[in-house]
Image 1 (cartoon, rainbow, N blue to C red):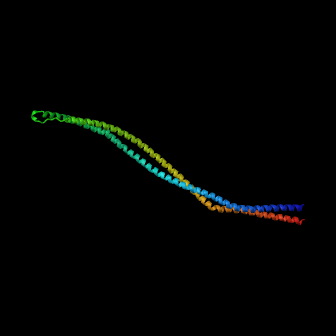
Image 2: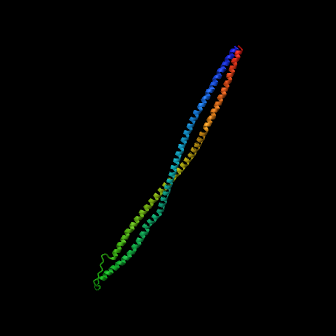
Image 3: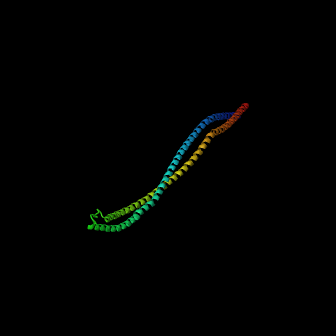
Length: 272
């Protein structure tokens, strides 16, 4: 009975050792082949990720350039609108002065002129009457004072024309005041536009900052991918060698089982 158990145990150890040794050898071959395939597949994915990062970096460069051009355009537009607003603001006092001149100073001058003309008209009437009386005397001769339009009448017409001109100046004052009010509204609108453009420019600067940060992140990832691409094969080799050493150790252990099984078979024969 003891001999049977020794033989059975020896055979079991031999079979287990043989299967274990075979497994170790097959596993070693699989690890060798799998390492090459895994290295190729992982490197392909790393290369794909690197290409995606490169495309992203190029896209960010385009975005950054577009933002820079837009900032430049908005800066010029903001400066232009601010200049227009300043011009409108400087024009308002001039228009107010013109309105005051047309509505106050010029009518006052015309009124003063009309008063002077009224005095001159009275004097001219006296002159006209005197000349008419003198030329009607028999001893004056053939000279007759009979103008188509007496001087005082002409002066009266000039005074009336000045009155019409005064009305025109007052209308001009109203028009200039309206223009000044419109300019003030336009100036306010232009200033609002300039502020809005400035706000858009600030938003673009913020966006440019975000793009710059993204560019930094992408550059860091590109460097990491480059490092990984260089270190990955050696790292996979270390892993493969570690697994191979474990399998070799298991194979050596199976050889020990085979030896022990053969020894038990030998003992069973000696005891027969």
